[in-house]
Length: 483
Image (tube, rainbow, N blue to C red; front, side, top):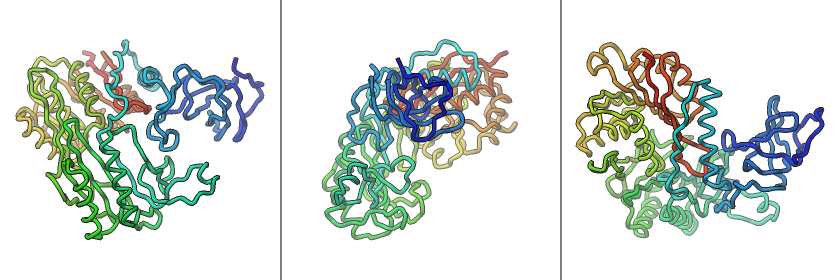
């Protein structure tokens, strides 16, 4: 039985809460427990069902944050994480939880957010769509070179003299420290080989690593992208233009890995690592890779999507198919529909649906993404799509509607922050018979659906797991207008 504290106990930083029973999984991958007084405690790397001793690290007015100091009874849902970096890099905080339990808590999070944040009336959820692969599923990964390697407590205690150069992930909350990665389980073995080769080449040839505080160094970032068809893209950022050193490195990389599809680089002297405003040099190959996605109906050819260095594409290629299939299952088109696809990006959802409706109008703020959407439409010989660059909340003027027509359905797939209130008001003004809302953040989805509830009811909803071993989950909801 969990330890019961006296009701007068007030916990402060450094206090120990013994025999605390972990009851649920919460936001940002943290587990949840409650003290005997009912105070909420958030604990990273705990699993629902654990009984632990926890040390308070933050005492807030309405909750505590704590860390595990002793595991008395492990949860039946607990398992051994395969990654040696688990607990440090912060990339996959649920590796220590059985996958079926992960799916349960992800579905529960979506339902809880829609119920409690949105105050929405819900049908029974459709089953969560599990990922066919729980490791090796990421088709894009970004690493940082750094001369300020993160040292573990054990390394510091042992006082060993370590090379501080690293190629890996930033420590959560520490922009100036990078955890060196030997093997990442979330992407494939070939990209792991590329990363390790570049690190050892840089060490052997005495190339300087980026110093985030001084803003100096040659090697800055590495981005790796690949497709299910076996095409690979490598993008390197360099802190200054040492042409001879850069070309020697790139030539060596191509000689060692001749199967690389394309290799690009940029000189970045900015204060941030963002790629989108940099001029890229295509050193090898066509400058893009191409992905194939199975069509919704087997009688149609797979879709081809060209992925350029700055293009967005769903990070889990196999689950992207499941996500779009669920959206189309919800819509159940007859072939006569005019569909608006808001936040269309590079047109992936619009093109996936285009073969099964009369026409799709895709709207996206970023002009480069619209250019990619046009390219992808041509690649797939799809002629019933129109892609328009514009601010969604300002696009749907009377002239626009007169030109393109009133939509029979609208698909929305906004960023994590959800939709701007003006966009919600636009949807209420257009009032299509059906809306399919795809979200990577069910909390903001719940907020937006609450604003739409004056005219719409939720008919179906369900989760799609795009990111095993993380707390992230996609949510899809079908809304019908209340006539």
